Image 1 (cartoon, one colour):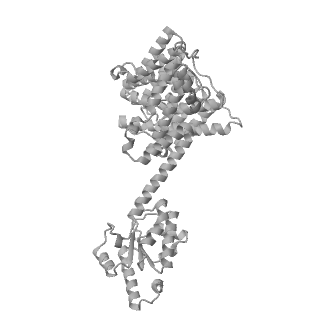
Image 2 (image 1 turned 45 degrees about the vertical axis):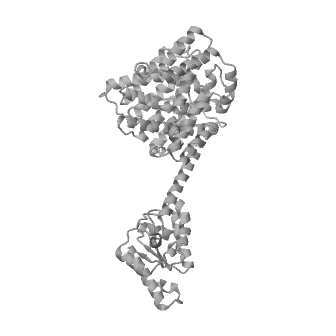
Image 3 (image 1 turned 30 degrees about the horizontal axis):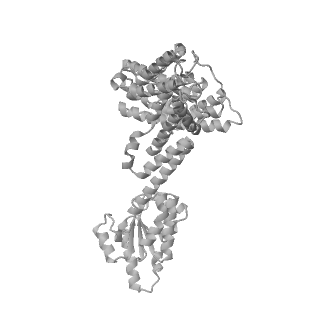
Length: 554
C-alpha cells in the first residue's frame, strides 16, 4: 500500500543521502529563523521528511521546513510568546487540517490557484526572508518580529556592522551564488558555505554563534489551547495548512515533470498532514515539499519513498551525534544561506519576461507581493484569487457577449441551411435570430438582456436558439426573463428553439416561462423560423393595424 520497494535502492539511497546533506544547513537555518531554535528545524526536517515520504502521494518528494512555512511559523512563535504548548498546537492543528483536506479530496482545487497569485506570494515570502535576515548579515538581531521591524532595523545595522559577521556573511553569499556546478556534484554549495564559514569563524572569532544545541531525541509536547489564544491558533493553523498544501503540491508538479510520473494530490496532503501533526507533537518546525531538495534527490537517482526516508535518517544521525559541532555555526552564515533561499523563492524568471505578457497578470502579481510583505499571507492569497477569478469571469463574459449577436443582421458565422436563409430573406430584416454559443456565465448574463433589446429594436419577432446551451443558472434565467418581458412590452413575438429539458425545468422552477411567448418552443431552429415567418405573413394579410399579439394563442 505504501509503495516501498527496492528496484531503485542504490539510486534512492544516494539521492536521499545527497538531499540530507543539503537539508542539514537549511534545517538549522530555518530552525534558527523560526525562533524555536536550530534543533527544532532539524526535528521538523526529520519528522515531516520521514512521514510525508512514507504516507505521501509523490514518490520522489523530499519534505521539510521551507521558507514560506517558516515565515508564517516565526510570526506565530512571536505572537504566542514562544509558549511551546500553544505554538506547537498550531502545527498539530495545521497537520490535522491538511489530513482533512486530503480526505475531502481538496487537492485538485488547491492547484487551481492562478499562477500570478502563486508567483506573487512566493516572491513576497522570498522578500520577507531576505528582510528578516539582512540585519543578521551585519551581526545584529532585529528587534521585534515581523517584516516592518526587520526593515526598520536595517539602516542601524548597516551603520554599525560587526565586520567579522559581515565578512562571514559575504563569504557565505559568494559561495552559495558562485559555487561551480561541477563542484556541486560532490559537495553541495550550502554545505560548503556552512563548513567554510564555521571553520573561518572558529579561527578568527568575534561573530555571534548559535551556542549550545541539545542533542538526542525530541521530547513529547502536549498541545494546549487557551481561551485568549484560541482564534489566533486556529487562524494560524489554517494559514499553515493552506500554505503547506500549495507549497507541497507545486513541488509535486515539479517532481512529476522531472520523473514523467503523476502524483496523487490528495494522498500527498494526507502524508504532509501526518508529518506536520507528528512534528508538532515533538517540537518540530512545520514543513512542506521542498522544491530544491526534491530536484537534487531526483537528479541524484532518488525515485521512490526510500529516498525521502533516507534523507530523514541521515539528519537523525546528525542530531544524535553532532550537536556540539553545530553550536559553533555563526548566525551570519545561516543568514547568508537564507538570503540565497529567499532569492531562489522570488520568481525572477517571470519578472524578467512579465512585461511581455498581460499587464493585468503583472499588476496582480505585484499586488500580491505587496500584500504578502506588508499585510499577511492569507489576505494576499484571498484577494489575489478573488481578483483573478473576477478578471477571468470578465474575460469570459466579454467573449460570450461578443459571440452573441443577431445572426440575421450581424453576419455571425452560424451555419444556416439554404432553407433557413431563404425564409429569413423572405421577410427582410423583421426577424432577429440570436444564437447562444453555449452556457452563459453570470458575468455575461447581466448584459444579455440589454444587448438583445438594442439589436432587435426594429424587428417584429425574436428567435432565441438554445441548441448549444446545456444549462443555465439563476443569473441566465433572469436574463431570459428580461428578454421576454422587454419583447412582450414591445409587442414582439419570442420563439425558442432547441431548449433541452434541464433548461426548461430551470426556467419553470423560477417562474420564468412567460418569456417563451405562451410556451412556444420548437425542437429545431428551422421549425421556429417557419412559424415566425408565418406569423409575420399573417400580420401582413390582416393589415398593419392588427394586434400582433392576436396570434400568440397558437
